[in-house]
Image 1 (tube, rainbow, N blue to C red):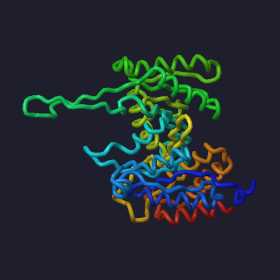
Image 2: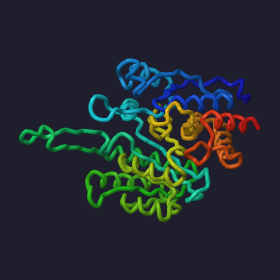
Image 3: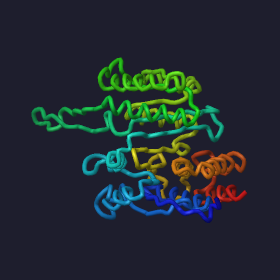
Length: 344
């Protein structure tokens, strides 16, 4: 099909906060060079949503995603302390985006070469359900803080099925379930049990083993090549996915996909980096790779491959890199070089 002639797919675009609008604009330009596969409905969230209408997750943004069932999101800022819940968490809950998929691959050779690991994280249960409260003692109304986590057997089975199905689709051979069942016997024990139950349906096709989370963190540093896929609870997946990104050069090189029953949201996984916002030096690769996952999701596999190949060539053959990767390119000059690569 002629890329210029095909019909664009409706999708919601959330530029985000801090460097979000910069890396999002770069991503939109690159996607236009790929034939404009998406027709954007631009909406706000995070601090931009608060500034615009007093809500970190405006109703218009929710309505847009309900309509398109597909979104690309820049990083959002959540105010520290009281007042506003994380818009990221609210988005996952609103659309039951139960699976967070974080593929991590070496693009720029460094300390760890040939890394190729996919982390699948349960996205809406665990400790991030945030059932929290304080217990007053004496004159201190916040003397004790209490947090209740929740994992369900069905939620564990659902994310395990997601991981095993992903493994089959992508030729993966082994899944390591990460837990702390030696101490958190109920909360993470049920997650481990559910994964083992599901694994029986995939016997002979995908292997399952398990690691206690602290041992897994150490082994990821000593010998990450032993891992193929990681299946994690919400909190452990959040932590280990950032550790994985560190193996390949940082969060600027790691994308994320949030998948639900009928809705998918793709995002740069780094923060909003307000300290460099507006300086034109932000690395857009995480957002670009997230767009690549989005292309995969809608069946535009060849476009996704072209995009990832052009990113690697721009970084390694052309040596065009932003300061976080040891280069001197601006966001715009990197984007220009990438678009030129796509034209080859």
